[in-house]
Image (tube, rainbow, N blue to C red; front, side):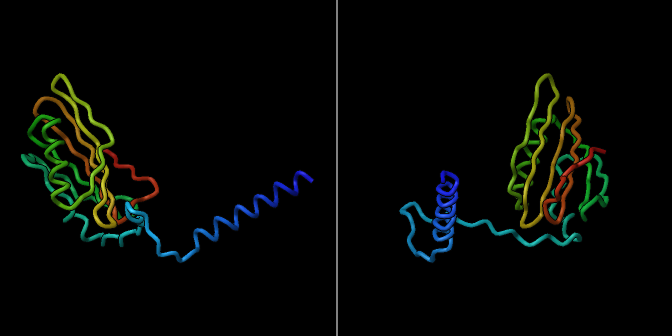
Length: 155
């Protein structure tokens, strides 16, 4: 008998949630309605290089090289302290339309760096840089959409 009551309660809960989720109510809260997340269209692979800004004071650039999932990899050697270079690069990414998330930053005793991820339309990127004194190395991987395993190997 107890199992029957639990099953009936579960069915009632499922029906209640389905009815709420599927209702066509036009009511909105005073704070506004929650927005739904809509995936942006993938970026064409040939457009990916145009999404990647070259860091200021770049001394050397390698790539773009093709990587898995139709992505590209670039590597930059930059003249400047890691903290200053990565802060400036984050700003350059935002100026190119990237929505940037900081994953980690480090610094001290002349060294340091940062790792960012970001989206630009449907595109997804990993931006990893670090170094010591006035030498900073940045590795960039960008894909048309976020891959299942967005691993950006350092060069």
